[in-house]
Length: 85
Image (cartoon, rainbow, N blue to C red; front, side, top):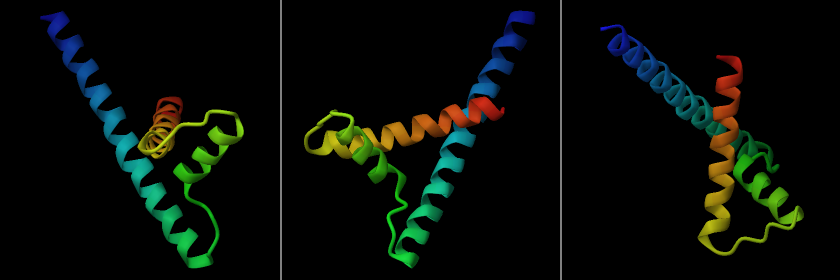
């Protein structure tokens, strides 16, 4: 019985972290895209992360380049959620 309770608590904690990551990162990104358009400045995190990867010598091609920026963006969001949880 104890193992079942522990497993259920762990699953709920993981679900809470994933949900907070997806919602928090998505809302922040939507706000950044809005501000980016409003002030005609580049505040789009995935685009900036792609630029940093290119400057670091990670030259990805095609869709992988865009996907890598988004994946890194959400990974950073996950790390923030874990750090502040």
